[in-house]
Length: 405
Ligand code: ZN
Image 1 (cartoon, rainbow, N blue to C red):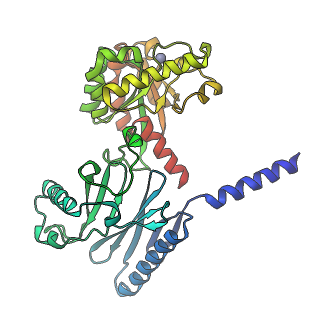
Image 2 (image 1 turned 45 degrees about the vertical axis):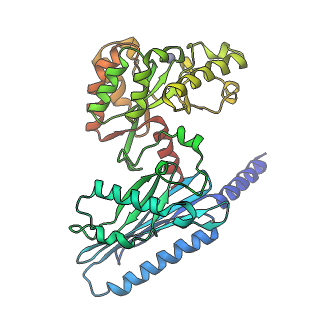
Image 3 (image 1 turned 180 degrees about the vertical axis):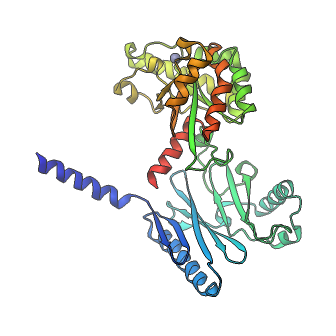
């Protein structure tokens, strides 16, 4: 028996080992060099990345030999689009007598097995020029527009919302060592590649916009059983404190709160599904269960244009069988405010603050005023402990990325 388990374990290790992406870290303590870059398992991409890294590293060693404690730091970002297009950007920072930043991007299409250039992605480059200049002038009033007359689109990444273009240095007169980036919305461009719009619609992940780093302490506030007359006030508090939440709504109620639902999406919060009538799910047949879910999916989509991706089972109860009936991700919680039971601000705080850790999901309710009363204090105390607020989808995404690192 033992032997069989051991063999299974070995097989598991070897199969996962082959496919798994890894992040390579090379640190030279003496020379103040720290390099991190992804290994994707795609040979041509990995070769291109390591060639660039080696070249940068060798040049650094040569060029900065005579400087006092020069430092080289290469970091990366990694993004996949539609499971097909891989974006890797390498950010090089050299600290010697001054600071120098460089960027290099790789955009690789797994389907065609080719690196993509801007000509492969955008049909109308004039339109891109126009949008880029408009964005640039809006974001940086001091931009040197002469530079833009012969711009090249060598450095960019693409996700399901934006084409991000990296420019510089020398494009800004004052801070000419800085790399700047501009997000051009895909909606404003004619594209030559397929972006999965269904996915796009469901995407609430806005980590970059919210200025969240993957190693920040994160927490997700969740509100069940709404919307209600208190939900707008909760949204006010979230907005005033630069926070967000995930609202697991009961489908039969949402028609009365169209505006509230639209606010959730617009203000960076997320909507999840909490069934249509809040029935005890384990008692339902497959058809009844699917109806409870689908009716809520449909009504939220009709109002907001967004389709929920997350499901919170009523009373926190479900079976694997129920789970297999839907593609939605089941989301429970690890911190229970018990707001409906304890009712006072102090007791709600006591249930939440000491029990919250990095990556926690906090359960509250927006169908009565107890959590509303405590919310301001909850946010304040969590902020004092350096927590950043994310939606549940963002939290799951960050956890996934951390696991891969
Ligand atoms: Zn509930």
